[in-house]
Length: 296
Image (cartoon, rainbow, N blue to C red; front, side, top):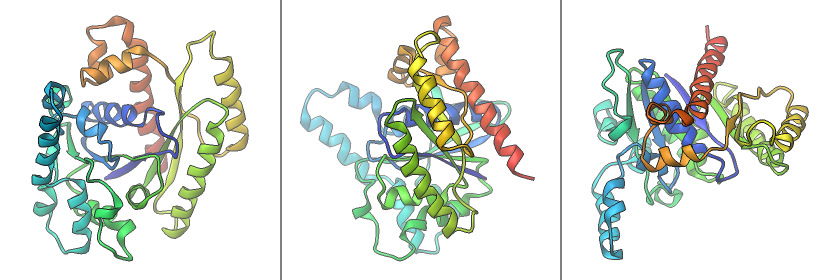
């Protein structure tokens, strides 16, 4: 089971877009994929169809919205999964927190690929975790119980460094850092890589291998002079970290997200979206190739 955190200390760079689309492309290849939503905004859970997005879109009053939020208290989700890290729980108990993706992210694949979701919500906050010296490792403890259930675990994280985020990094064998190619990006990458280095030292390098940096929301060729300049600076500062193929800024990303569809599926009926969809497909292929090169 390959555990991957999509993580950076800066918000608004497209982490969730990467999470749900990489998960879909991996599942399309026949892999069993678990998406773990550790961001209290829970956008990955909404996109993957487990957080009542259709119902939320139809609400017309604050009361109706609160009723939907209250309904999350009745289900098991990622915060409950983390709390189980203090107990000797069975695989069956762990699976009660996990739900199949729905809408366009549900695959009926002959190859056996699928996406399951360990959803988050507004309840995904550190204050809801028990006080324990092993609290940063609850997620890792629990995921190891599911090692025969999934080929890949993709974790969506919030941009802050709280106990929830540390759980993702301690559970991640690999880390992908999405970053815009802007001047302030280098500082964000520096903070992220430093914290990941701490994880590597604490786990004797069994966790936190940085696969690379993904340039996000880059401009189209001919208008990407600044992006190329900043990318060059980042390569100079972090010579040992791979720079993956860029992911262009595109209105089709927002359109696919609004329809809660993976980009490659959205592009099947929109030829103009195929360029940016192919970028994500190629990125996924390169990530798999990179991991294969690191593992026996």
